Image: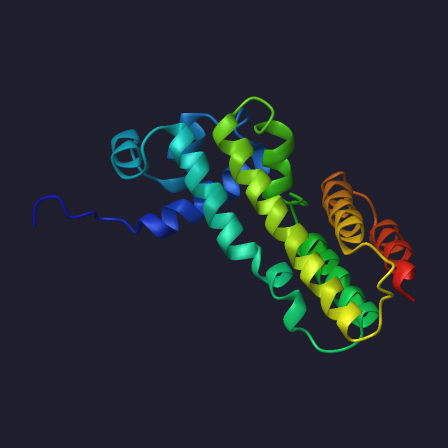
Length: 193
């Protein structure tokens, strides 16, 4: 059968995502991509396009795979404080379970590529906006339930929670201890006690 791929593009993309997540765009050469996937340049280019297109595909895969928990925040049961406590604990556990301590690919892309790449900037801004919206919807739900006063600005608090989450992800990549990450989360959620 002419033209049939002898590899699984999704598996190759998973490997590429791991490489870019670990080394960044600039730190990953085409040769690194060839080595990590075991594919030839031609197969990579024919399937995904150039290095930039491959990076975008990897970033989109990351977002699809790892953004779910924040988007599902409003569907969680419990008090606002309990939901945030669980969310941040799970986030920290996930970050620290990675032996390479890569942090968050989305945050890494926001810092490395977004300032000079409009396409990646648009993608990362969209993802950060979705994260903020996840917090916002949770806060509105808490206001409706009477847990959060109507005098509180849910937009302002959503920005604060997003900033805390991004900071924790950066600090995890910077090899900070569990205690530091948990202290950051505890301090942030103490606002909702």
